[in-house]
Amino acid sequence: MPDLIDDYRMLSGAVDTLRRYWSGRQVILLANQFTHSTQLLIDEVSACGATLVGVVTRPRRAPERDVPTWSCAERGIDLSPHEFEPFLSSPTDSLREWLDDIDPTQSCVVLGSIWTTMSHLCGRPVHGWRRPEWVAWEDKVRIERLWADLGIPSPRHVVMSVDDPGLREQAMALDGGRGVVMAVDSSQGVPGGGGKGLRWVRSPAEFDAALKSFTGRTRQVRIAEFVEGVPCSTQALALDAGIAVFEPAEEAMLRDPCSGDFRYCGTSTWWRAPDAAKDTIETYARDAGRRLDELTGYRGIFTVDGLLTDQGFLATELNPRGAGGLGFRPGWPEFPTYLFHRAVQENVLGIVDLPPESVQAAFRDVIARRPSFSGTIPLGTGPVAADVVRPGTGTRAYTTTPSGATVRYQVGAQTVRVVDVAPASADGTVGPLIAEFVGHLGHPGLVSFSDDSVRSTLASVERAADGKPAARTRGAR
Image (cartoon, rainbow, N blue to C red; front, side, top):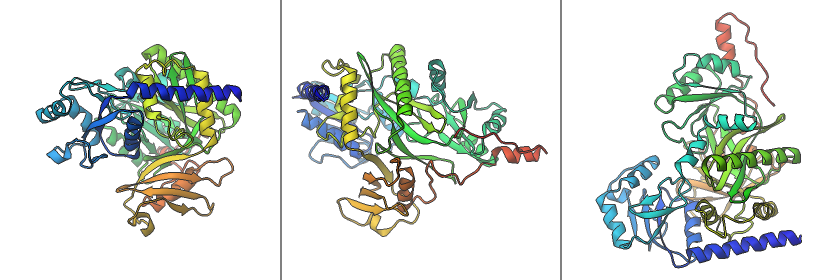
């Protein structure tokens, strides 16, 4: 206990360091969209003594009405989310003039989202931007080389050119009865998180549709066996003296049996991996962080994502960036988590040189003391219960059946933010009840990792057509 008290004091000292760093600074915010995370970042800026003096945004609505705002939408510039940053990289004269008006000496610091890859905005430094050599390892195809190099297991797979005529045959060979997962590379741009760039394929028709959708989006495709297990994400922090690894958290990654799409709906720290598996995953995450450091000098939060199966952990993705769902804020709401991560990225002394063992111990203790769920879900187009979208603010509750678990949530303009979940399962998993709640929001038919109702015809149909037996191999379970 005395050591843990010292660890907490160390983190309190880190907060003081952040306040000294930001006190008196003026900040310009880049807001591609306005989310709960955007408001939390604004709150952290204010709490650390900085002043938000301007917002550059893609949509119309501003997070702070009394702060000068330059909106693309209000100026008739219609951009999709992925077009916002390229626009800022070649800004209009109107935007340049507006920035020079609110910041004539170019002394402001610019803050973007965890996705921001710009180093400067019209001569002003962007604090916490993602370096291109970091982004490169978010490639869902390239990462297989790192897993193999480190001896970290991943699902059975092949990597092939998108126009290789043997793709279908390889997909059939990898189908163990639940289909395959096809993933694009990042040669045409990083698909992003939340299951983007992935397709669950269980029939020849779905294979053809996936391949068609990948046209022009990728050069290579990874085809992997669909493996049953608990989707999980382990966040870690690369510091100067080593890697702090936090405990694995369950990802509510749902599947759409109709389209084959994956839908990320949040992360839960209620689930606890068995001790042996947890230790193994920690070793994998630490090895991955060390290799990232060797290859790119990476600093900051990163995640190792994968599946915990009956046969062990299988890695699927590495995300060298900040990510949602750490679960630290519910236990220590005043701690400026977003600015802490950015300070590590930017090698701020007093933060990046903290001892990783102490950071790991304190973070784990805070998260374990207050298990939580973090997720934002869009309202669907299917039938939605009237009480979900009725006007009003505050927190509401939904009780799932038959488990009787409770989901507490808040309704926004187009989304629902899950405030917390009280799981009823013995192991703390929340995927099944989140699938039920998402159906309540107008997304009927989505299933969780535990659903075993959809079987694949990818291999059986083709082999039957050739007059051969539709033999299957059993997937990892």
